[in-house]
Amino acid sequence: MPWREVNFDGLVGPTHHYGGLAPGNLASARHGGQVSNPRQAALQGLAKMRWMLDRGLPQGVLPPQLRPNLGALRQLGFQGPPQRLLAQAWQQEPTLFSAACSASAMWVANAATVIPSCDHPQQRCVLIPANLISHLHRQLEVAATYDLLRHVFASRDHFQVARPLPGVAALGDEGAANHMRIPVPGAGALHVFVYGRDGDDVTGPRRYPARQTRHACEALARAGNLDPKRVLYWQQLPDAIDAGVFHNDVIALSHTGVLLCHERAFVDQPQCLQQLQARAGGKLRIVQVPEQAISLQRAVDSYLFNSQLLGPVDHPMLVLPLEAERDAQVRQYVEVELRRALRLREVVYMDLRQSMSNGGGPACLRLRITLHESELNALQGRLLLNDERHRQLVQLVERRYPESLTLEQLSHWPTAREMMDIVAEIYGVLDLPTRLLERFQ
Ligand code: SUG
Image (cartoon, rainbow, N blue to C red; front, top):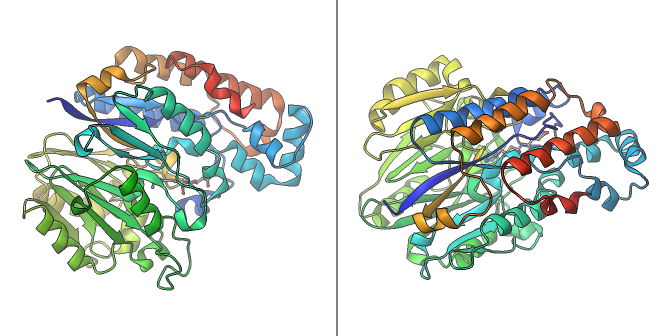
């Protein structure tokens, strides 16, 4: 098989904390201010990567970004040597300080939109970093993500790393979390782009922000040179956004030949699904979870849809968060209905509670990139995991990551510097140049 789907998971950074920074993301709001455990957070993510390796699935890793982001604090007007800069920012603007310390780059499903070379007329894999303009702490990821992707996917023969879309509200883009690439067995792939807002449209959500726009989706499809006949644009149901569906991957997921979604995910859903099936020549398995079986609210609270469908198309595996198992109604639905409807060979519930408390489930933590064998060989850095590299990362985390962290601790320069050193060590393990860290200084 020359093309393979590789899951690149974001390694949780040592400054992982609960900033309460993301309105509309209910878990983030609920846990804001709690004490975090960065070590456990990173180990939980690494355990998911280990599970993938044990099943022979290719698994990559993307490093955390350097935090606290001193460069961003300077840009925000704080001055002086690091100890003064950090102390002032913490005392005067704790929310800005939290944003500059956020480990949110771990949710790499928001890092970029990816169009693999098998879908591209010139056989180029296109990566478009998301502009993440909806929140400061997320927007601060963008420049470094761009630099990282430019380094890792440097080969011009294989890859094109585009610039993020211009950072204006009309072009809000949150990456792969709002894009479903659905390969149709024997007939190429279809691309569904999901948006929450279309221009000045007044039919959008009332309580919470819509993060992705239709204009952004259209620009992404153009940038990826996609054949318009293979692209669909769907609007998120405003009620779903208001119920906490801040990204499409909180309410729908796809795999080769499969779409699984809640009944109340999209505007004009019956027509959307009909059109999709027609474009696929009737070859898709589309499973809708009815409101009566699992309410929208239950779906958001359990993160049922923020799962990963993996492996063989006939009998895939499903990776869900532990929260889905803990809800008896959801578990029952998975074990009976989904096992049958998706012909699942294995169901596993992963403890990712440290990330989940910030609204980041299994699917948020990974960016899917379908790569040709020759592209895999062209990657720079040691980002593809094997037993040895996985072990190195686990040991590093166990040796250096803090077990408990409050934001205030990061306002002390020695602690902040220690966190920055840890990230530099991770770059060493992954064979990434430290020049990629310079823009934070
Ligand atoms: O953007 N949480 C992230 C979670 C991203 C989940 N990603 C996907 N669904 N693909 C967000 O809302 C919370 C950070 C804090 O509150 O400290 C946060 O940014």
